Image (cartoon, rainbow, N blue to C red; front, side, top):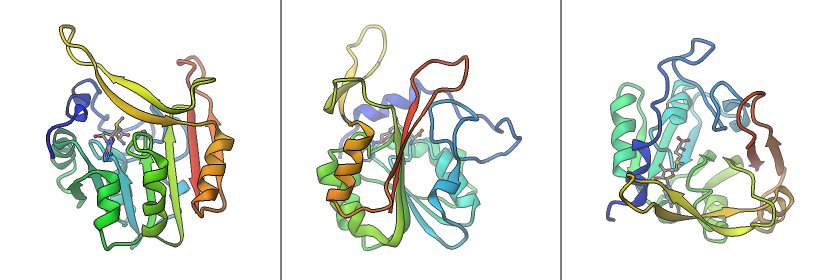
Length: 218
Ligand SMILES: C[S@@+](CC[C@H](N)C(=O)[O-])C[C@H]1O[C@@H](n2cnc3c(N)ncnc32)[C@H](O)[C@@H]1O
């Protein structure tokens, strides 16, 4: 596996704070805004659970999963992201793999109580490829949840997403998959998921206007 466009991405993103507004050192954030939206309760996991983050990036959410006492497994295609996760969360006990999401799910023998993705691999992978393997690797009653930006009206299915580089370089391009909430419900149902809920969470007051789509299924 060669370096990917995603090795460029962490350079643009501010570091996660040392504590959140509530003074906590680990926390779960489904949205693109600090101190906003639901937390890890959406996953319904506790001590001893096995949880997988698809596209864990620098591992901030995964560190919170580990702090809850779960086995916290994170996969990402980017070495740069994984190195940042290892450095920041060295004492938390994350299990990290450099892998593509579909390939990992295809090859692992492990089954999970929850699989989630926060603006992660579930957004940047064709659901027709990904969902059969998520279904296969979830334990009975396990939860699959993901968040991403809601679709732009009229722009559905596979879309091009830019990852900016320096001023002198063209941006890199990755693919993402955008659907309306009711289309996600159909797609998930077609792949055997039940108890599907979709929610478009508005941006916090006085922040930018783009909200967050949060999807949960079992
Ligand atoms: C926008 S970042 C979000 C990172 C992290 N979830 C967060 O909330 O900060 C997207 C992440 O997904 C990873 N990613 C994208 N496509 C992937 C794939 N097919 N398999 C594994 N990881 C992937 C990228 O390397 C990147 O770390």
